[in-house]
Image (cartoon, rainbow, N blue to C red; front, side, top):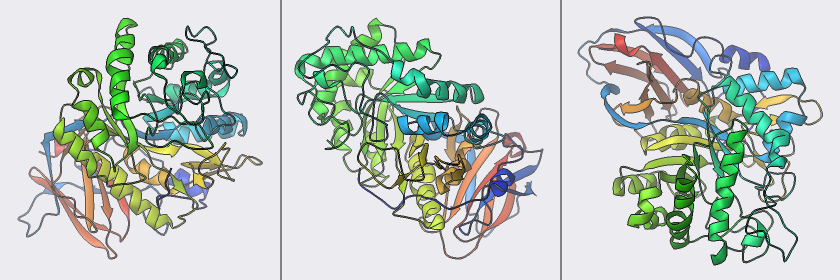
Length: 482
């Protein structure tokens, strides 16, 4: 995992958090535009401001943003992060019941918190785990092609209960499962570390993924989608990974995984790549295979190298296939709240969605004060929240607020809608229409000075002064905007 300046840790007051996340996030009174603001100096953190009034639009010399809710693009599934083994263990074991309930509400409830609606779940250990494990580990030199030793008991201890609690708080929550490695006996390395999938293990691996989905669903935790391999072009030396070339992934999907899903009536989508923006040729190679194309739902990207605009290359070549953004981490290498807020808004909340992502995720949902637990890889990555192992105190990091500007307001099933150009380094923006008809506009003032913002939709408009470097979300009923 390559580092980038993304997002990190300000020490924030719980009182500010509570104030910033109170109020009705689902819409606004007739003719009223709700405003939620985060400033780079942290004086306002997802704080609700005085509502604005939609008025009859006047002849304007310059309209910064013109909303057209009749021109729609991709349908959104949600915004969120990954519930790694480390994240789930901290939430389950380092918080008392009151602390856990408060945190889960602030993560998953739309009113009390930011309403996370999509999460990625490592299938077995990632670098952020307490130990290396898969769901069918065998002693070196032994194998289990019939998967007789298969068990998800490890995840039943604290991962699945945490997911069950999250699903109870937000029934709209969807999950994506991703393995960092097949069981070692399926690989050329005979280990979860290094190596690639053995040719004779394609069928057992497809059956293994099928059994994971079935076992999780039996616990009331269904997977919306899976990717066959995390970061297939990176093979780490100190935590699970598995090299997989595009022709190999295509072979696995079209001849083994797709048929296994069909045979077992698995409805989970198959999503490919799950790696950086810089190699769009990888998913295009698979999507250009007519047989693989039939079973692939879309492509997942990470943000550690390349540019977000590369997503559009894949969309333009295969516009009927979905795009997902599934990983980017903040870390101790970047401690400027305003800079981190700006990066996430520009590249992920606005950039990824304007480049066709229907899902946008950060990496770890929660890590501790020492950037762990971890078994390798990144030694200073940070979660959306930081949980102190000794006290159970929770720090809400900057991505909590950047992602909250979308996740709290853009509901699962919303569509991105036309909102005109987003001007890099100036007013950057993206708009959505929720299933209830309400309009959500997310705006970043990336300039170093305050900006006068005018928004027009139909015959109505409103104006607002955006502070320099600030992010804002505007919500109003679509029926009042004609």
